[in-house]
Image (cartoon, rainbow, N blue to C red; front, side, top):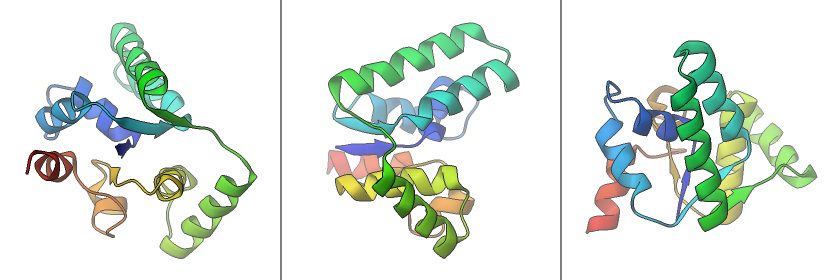
Length: 136
């Protein structure tokens, strides 16, 4: 199972994204997890930045498929406490820290396209890297 942040869901939708092919392929692999925060993040990008209601609907559908077929982590006191610690320790936004905390809770690798804040710090891996690990 692989834990996804919103950037992977968005990259799978955006054919112009450099990570599009790997992100889309990763979504096809099956056992996936994410956090409920992803729903709000994908809606925000699709509706506010892209102005694309159809993309928003597809992204929400993918998210709920992950919830139905995989795992959707919901916020709770322990998760928010761990999020605060990670945000402080790594100088992350609470949003990024929440993905890291949830992936750590489940003992899963975190897939992200956020090279600057997550991948470069060893807190996540790019979709292509995780896809390659799955096929080896």
